[in-house]
Image 1: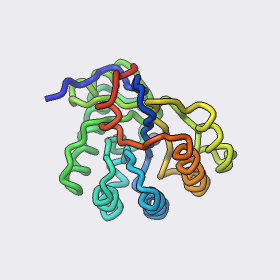
Image 2: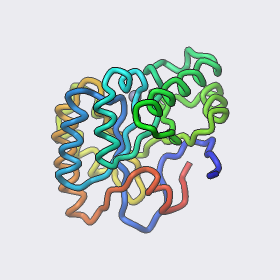
Image 3: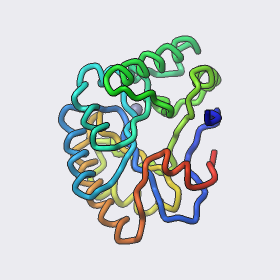
Length: 211
Ligand SMILES: [Zn+2]
């Protein structure tokens, strides 16, 4: 059994030109399939941190994510403000989501990303008890903000990205149309610069974890 990391993982140290794309807050019935189509078109693997409540609403969509060979992580059941929950409530929310994902896909998730990236002692303790690794991110283009156009989103990644980064996108939420356009632009640009896209677990296999 791999040892769980109770410090959040933001990125890794590596000599290889690799990055991991991650998508939060889905599955979404409209935008997740469009993102899957784009990823398929370019042959890019990604990691989806799904909400159990969305999984229960859109089981087909998460099955497509799995079928396409992407990685699935746990983003909790509801998108709670974790600062307002007890350790037990956070634990229960993680496990409820885990059960939804397991029931729908047969996969037992190993990575947890707390909504809003909240890392309070209650979150740390709940995650430790549930046995997950905590995956944060190192590049955040704030693609959920309605004020951000596709080129603003893509450029903010291009400006900051480096070897071993974990890039945060959203396939659920408010602004996915721009996310989708930015994603295409970014895949083409990073490919031209020689980057390879990997899942979070492939990333972690490739270097020293940066906490
Ligand atoms: Zn989220």
